[in-house]
Image (cartoon, rainbow, N blue to C red; front, side, top):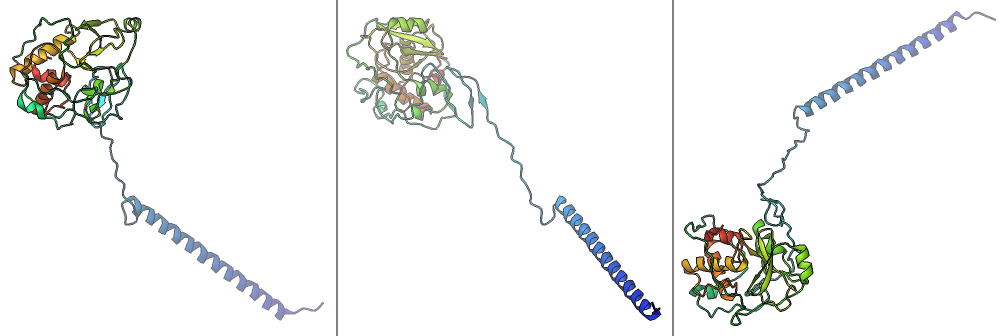
Amino acid sequence: MSNNPGGNSYLTMRILLVLICCFGLASFAGAAQQQQQQDDQTTTQGKKKGGGNAQSQQVVKPQTGKVYKASPGGGSHNANVQQPSTVHYKGTGKNAQKWQGPVTGGNPNLSGQTNGSAKNTTFNKSTTVNKNITVNKNFKVQHFNLSNKPNPNISKVTFKQGVHIQGSQNWQGPKYAAFRNYTPQWHDQWWWRSHHTTIVFVFGAPFFWESGFWYPCWGYDPYATYYYDGPIYASSPEYDPGQVVANVQSALQQQGYYQGEVDGILGPQTRAALAEYQSAQGLEPTGAVDEPTLETLGMV
């Protein structure tokens, strides 16, 4: 085996050159990686400080309206979202149509003695509530001697299963919820007595009391006469439907809206005068005895 100093020196130089190249490449790669990390960190800090690439976010707080106290029949109401409260009767009245006239259909008899503009009154047309409503503070509720017999000269209403008060879907607010939800029910005497403790007879017709309203007891007496099929608001069960209506008629007389007889019957003539008065006050012209109307008449 011969010695070759020249060949060994050449091999050593090649190995040294390869090692130098590898070391240089490794150093270059490490420097590039370090620079990339610094760039990423700078970008992240820029976004946190609201840099050009950062997207701003707007936090919207939920808005809540004024919550009203429970209305007759229960339930609470938000001023921004109208939620009808529940009463004894169920239903929404969404299928009801706009109308003019009594609850059970037809046109009211406006030939009686009412204020002249009552003949042109439109029932159940939603209006903008007048914030400057006038309240009669001088009216005194009194007791009237009313007949116990039906009046054959005033048209009566008939029972209609499953109907709602037409136009009541337009009456906004919790104080009209009982009207929106009402639908007549037909039961015998035993059922009415077992479900309601307060029942009175007006003009021979039975009414039951519930949550501030008087309702007709359809079927208690199959031959009873009703002149209005719907709730009648009263501030207390001490005042039966006849006395409430009679005082409404008296109050409307004093203000010139009603010129008929104070008989306690919520017939077409009285309803027309009511609707006229309600329209003048900026209330819903329901033609019904409701809480907002009694408040302005000074009866609540």
